[in-house]
Image 1 (cartoon, rainbow, N blue to C red):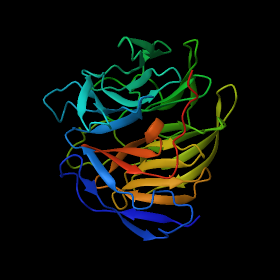
Image 2: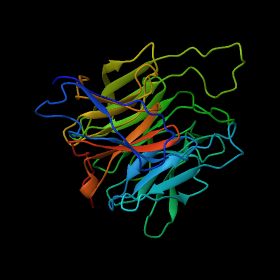
Image 3: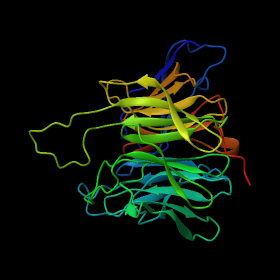
Length: 343
């Protein structure tokens, strides 16, 4: 399929709700466009410290993390924000958040959260949205805390896959590698990927046969390097693993290599299996859409380097929500997001 570029250059400084009109470049009149014809990148919220982890509840409400790095703020404890697409209002859902990062709703409509380091929970929690009560479903591996759970994905058997790098925080790094773990419905925790570089975003394909992992190795675990020292960046790539019916993962191939630029952060898949990837390459920041084999289909440029993406639910199932630095954006697509079958 031809490449479709969508470009706009307005920074994240305008009032929430203002439409940022993209310019269509190249094959904008394609008979099967990825982005809805005439779509506008809309800024929905612009008052966060660092947005991450968008996910959408069955009722269409958007939840996202506001990560408040304590070395950059007045020791704010992190927030989970809630955006109502009907009213356009954004409110605090939960604070402190445990320094929430990636989030996902499971098949029962419960909110599963990866809580990171930097005075965060360093665990995976699950919240019953009816009662508001939360439970810890993984907090230790081999008797030691995780490094900093970052992002997660859930398969149709209810197994949770999450990445565990470290990008910020004063806490000791107690797990010997940056890995990808699987939590089974019985609560057992298994290390399933050890060769994923510094894993960040993670997703499961709709056919349940592929585990996608983003390696974003920035070469540092915080911002306290000496002024005269630059981090040595490692692998920046989108990786594909064969996923067995038992939940084991075997490396298959590098789908996209972004080196020497920064690679992606988070991603989501649509119902057809295409990957929508938030790429932080400062020379071409935005959301890139790929086939399952890594062929680029479309590009949405964002004003700031994006962190993650999520599709809406129900009547907003073709709306893509994008977190990027201080902001939350949306754009209309022609594809529906993949959803777990509801139970």
